[in-house]
Image 1: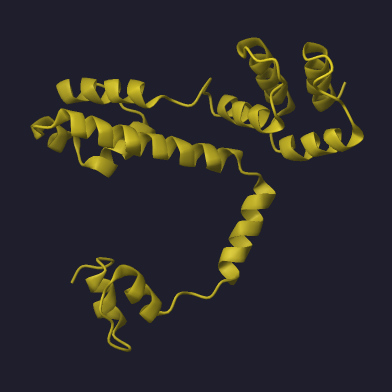
Image 2 (image 1 turned 135 degrees about the vertical axis):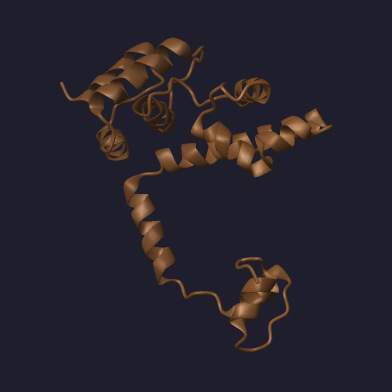
Length: 193
């Protein structure tokens, strides 16, 4: 049996009268889940049905997001508070491991060395958690965005004109003297000078 039909049948059975299988819905779900291994999609749907305490069926977006997490070896997106506990362990020992995401969040707020010397652990924690949550959100968006959507956005971005130096200067509040792009880049901090 077609895995998408299996998923939809599961949802129809589990949520009687709340999930209708139509030709249009089948086409939509196939389109939105086409780039994911069908077994992972089915596993994600089973997980959502079993793990959720909701009277409403999961959306195709929820199935997609869960399937993409599974495809990347994660049950759920990592939590910021758990990540902070890993950073605290690292502050105590250089041997304590950090994930790539945790390391990137640390870089956004400073360094492990800076955090060890900091006198404001509460601020470090708040900044780390904010940075980590932003990274998780961005990664989830990158994972769940359909390949065709990415392609269209990239094509549109490539078709846009490059910003003129005057516009960049205005946006960053730097002074621009016609034609002096090198000084503009220095003023904005994009190159050392």
